[in-house]
Image 1 (cartoon, rainbow, N blue to C red):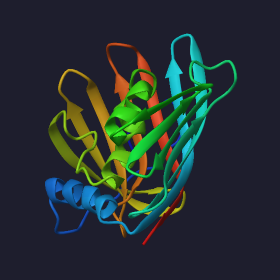
Image 2 (cartoon, rainbow, N blue to C red):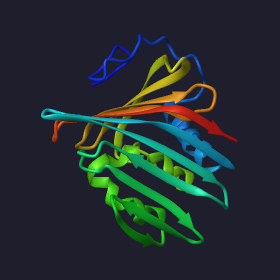
Image 3 (cartoon, one colour):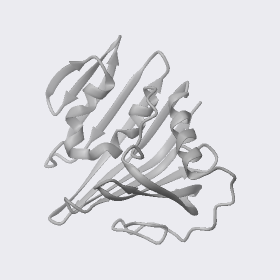
Length: 205
């Protein structure tokens, strides 16, 4: 399980005690609300998937404007299982483009569904919360605890460890100032897969 001391990606630093007044439950709720209430939001980052036989890295970008533009794009190497995936809002519907195929869906949930089996729920947590659903990888958690405060890309973050129902452990790093997610990590005990989602750029207003 990756913690402040490291992980399969080789990152991480020691954490210091969290001295804030919010409980872990309050932090997670306020984090979800920070997305659902955003007037505009943009992010860019990387998704790293490590399996016993291979390692794949993808890039992603999200653009959200309340009542206007919405797009979520994931791009990977040509030889990867999913080299290209996009979702765009078109009027009241969502368009999905996946490695040459095209479709439409009435909801973001349905538009993102083809991505789930490849990228797990962590990759799509932020787009779903932006759509107004207070949803995240904590839905299947039966225990959560604050580890402490550490740094991600030079920004102080609150590190939270989750124990998931039947899915092992996960870790969230919430930006201490905005409570936006700076990093997510999950180690699946069933598939022997480690996934790291790292947000290299975050903008919200």
